[in-house]
Image (cartoon, rainbow, N blue to C red; front, side, top):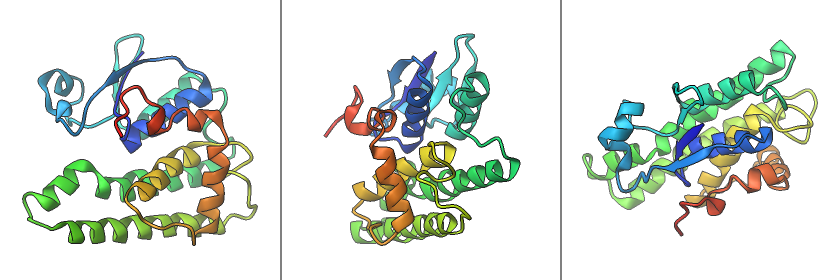
Length: 214
């Protein structure tokens, strides 16, 4: 299968973690977001939205949006599972993942930041305030969700990493990249640290990708 991504894309990062956890091989097709490669006709033919990631299956079908790709991977390559077998826990995992993928991450997206500083004429200080407000609020919500768990496990919702962890790690990486504190969020910090010990997460990190740029 062909995977279209970018080393610093949080949504691409999620998929790389899942590929590694499941031991799935793929052919990586870099799409340089900062150079605008996502707007080129060849890529827009795959994903009319012009966003990453995109996955072309072995059968030639095109999948977009990281959460949809992750669930497809889980259904077609079920071991190890990314979601709990318990319906209630599974709903909580999906809810946690959507807090990040639907509510936090879009507000730090490159196209949003470009619109702020370009069309709206926002200066760097105001852009930084925007990022701090939304990323901090989002991570605090994640912290509170983890604090509500009846059992505090090593990973978000169990003793092995799953969908929630796959979404949390790239979001914490983004917080670090933008200089936003999270050290006062003990549950988020603990899960992030536990994930960093696993090769599936480390190998998926932006610094370890073939298209990495310092």
